[in-house]
Length: 287
Image (cartoon, rainbow, N blue to C red; front, side, top):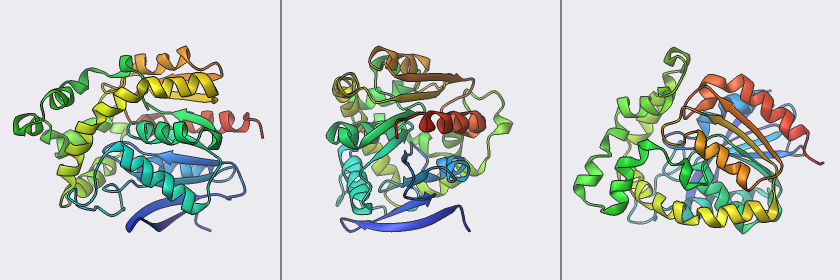
């Protein structure tokens, strides 16, 4: 029997591709991906945890194998990505789950959590940020876009869509870049080369400023609801450095805190350790 199945579900006329593994009767973990990746980034998690958990990983509109509606007909904001993801989960009948979030997964996941706190059993954050002190030096060009979006500030970000720029997301901060599978950034290159994808990603880069405005709301959610939180953080991430990880300690009492000597996509280099940590964390949750 295949451990992972590859499926599709139509949400508001948009084909949402997703990966699913494990028995739906077991505790569910919703895996929310980052930029520039897709559900592909969670392949190791799904292969190794399917025996004890139900795992589901959707691709957002414009990412992975999901549809890419043109920006003229679909507004690429994090509000909209979270809304579609929440509708996807509701259509699947999934109403109790832990969320694992990395990078873009945090603004998607925290929007869902603050809207439906009763559905969230736990939070696993792998470089999924919720604090201003967690914004690293790599945000300089994007912050310039926030200040004044124009052709010049957009052009400064075009390197993010090149093979060199995509590769950098995976190899910066790693102990040894030879540990990182080149298929990761080459798959991303294929996906970002589709029509409209550069434009929609610039829209999301610009909209990220609205996530920062919501940080206080997400922090209040954590203080009020006190979800169990597992931090599994690549401490050398130039987007979300260690300071973003440690900030969770301010608001969460039940925190399992772990740093790894790697970069942004920590699962690529430290997957075995992180996955076993996820297993033990999830098994310790109240049933």
